[in-house]
Image (cartoon, rainbow, N blue to C red; front, top):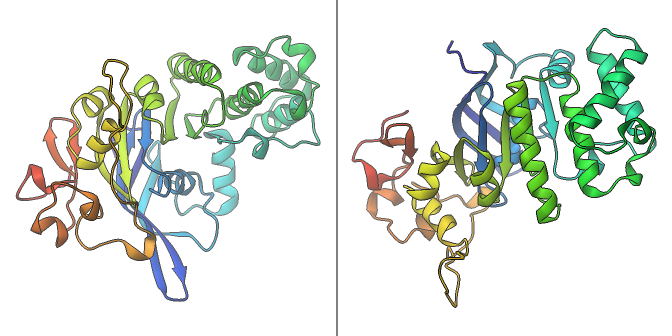
Length: 327
């Protein structure tokens, strides 16, 4: 095994239906090192959140992992019993979701929820856990933490609730955090604060973060590397600056061109024609070929694998090679 903190190998998530099995995540592989932020980006329905849910063992039935392996610090976790995975999920993997109200119990104070989580996974007294909980709230920027620890979720603003969720995710010093659209429902100013907080926590605690989002601006500001998904497959992966400045897959080019620029005065934004296919209608060959302005015969017949275009930067596109080579 390598020294990577997280390794996902050939992950395939399937949805069985009365008309057959539909592949929701198809042959996805990537690694994540300690202290690194990996951005997973793509349109709604690309399979980003399902990939994150598969890693932490929270796939909603009847979805299941049909193929692939997931390793956390060299330990395979995708086939662990539910209770064993639950202990890992609480202690070694933290989760941050888009809507903090789905992560917080409205009946209990935030302090009670923090203390309960800490004492479940760490062998300390409730008094010690409360001291730790207050410090965590201070660390994530909650003012007057000692007083607010007794407040309930509805007494916090949306941005403050998201900070509480981040404190919950960090309360057992996890090695990995899965952050699924953590800033989408927040004002732009609050988004910037949350992004800054995540970056600081990575730097100070050497925590790895898998950041799932559809916002390339958040990716550009936060991530070290970016993986672009389309129709359940990885289509491009590389250092965030390289992918943004020199995208090598037509889909990534379309995503970047659709972002308005303050340097240019244009009347119309560029768009990607068409829509992402449904699971039952994924086309043969490259799944992007019906929308791709550069598609040719091979694109419609043979699915491309990730091809290393330049060192550490790969794209699943036949434009770059006559022979696909796994990277």
